[in-house]
Amino acid sequence: MPLDLVTVPCLSDNYAYLIHDAESGATAVVDVPEAAPIAAALEARGWQLSEVWITHHHADHVQGLDELLKGREVTVTGCGADASRLPPLDRRVGEGESFDFAGEAVHVMDVSGHTVGHIAFHLPQSGLAFTADSLMALGCGRVFEGTMEQMWESLSKLARLPAETVICSGHEYTTANGRFAITIEPENKALISRIEAVAEARAKGEPTVPSRLSDELATNPFLRAGDAPVREALGMTDAPAAEVFAEIRRRKDAF
Ligand SMILES: [Fe+2]
Image (cartoon, rainbow, N blue to C red; front, top):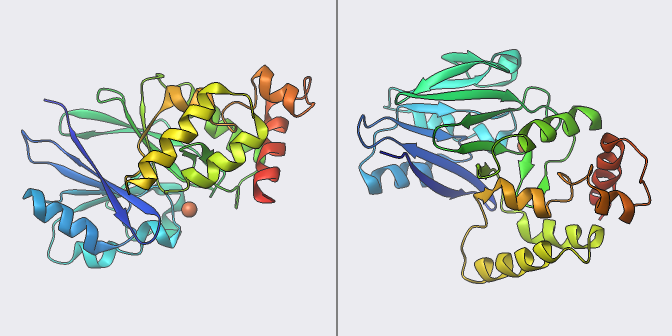
C-alpha cells in the first residue's frame, strides 16, 4: 500500500510533511516549524507520530520540536555532522546512508549550500524527496553557508533523481519565484503555464507544493543553469554551469 503524504502549512509560509504507513501505523514528520498544526493534522487522522526527520538547523524548521515531543515516544533523525546545531538526535545520518521507514528505504543526501549540513530524504520506492530549503518549487534556498559551487552540486544531485519524483520543499515562495524565473526565460512556455497554474492555486488558497521534478527541470531556472536556453539568455554560453547558477542566484538575491 502506498504511503500517505500530508502537506501541513505552518507559520506564515513554511511547510511540514506527514508520511504515514497505514499497515504498520508508522508516521513521520519532516521538519517542525511549529507544533500545533502538526499535532492537529495527526489528531484529525488518528495517527501516532513515531519519527521526526530534520533537514537543517534553521529555527523555522526545528523550533516546534520540543512542544511536539511532549508526551510522545519519537525517534529524531538528523545530520550527524551538524548535530551540534540541531536538537538532540536519536539517529545521526549523512550522505549515502539509508534507514528503514515502514519497510521502505530512506536515502539520505547531503544537499549543503543553504546551510552546510542540510540533508534531503529520498524514498525511491514511493518516489518522494524531502528537499526543504535546497531545491524549492521554481527556486532554491539562498546560499547562506556553503559555496555557490556546493549548492550547484547539491541541486545537480537532486536533478538526477527519477523525473517523476515528487519534490516536497519547505516554503510557499513559488509566486515570487515565478516572478523572478520569467525574467530569466520570458519565452519558456512551460514556465508561463506553470506561473498561471500557481496563480490559480494561490487564489484558491492551495499550496503549490509538492511539485514534480520533471516540472522543475522544465521551469526552475536554478536547475536549468546548464541548459542552452538559460546560458544564452545570460550571455554565458561557454561558462561552467556552476558559474551560470551563481549568476542566477546573485540576480535572485538582488531581485
Ligand atoms: Fe532554511
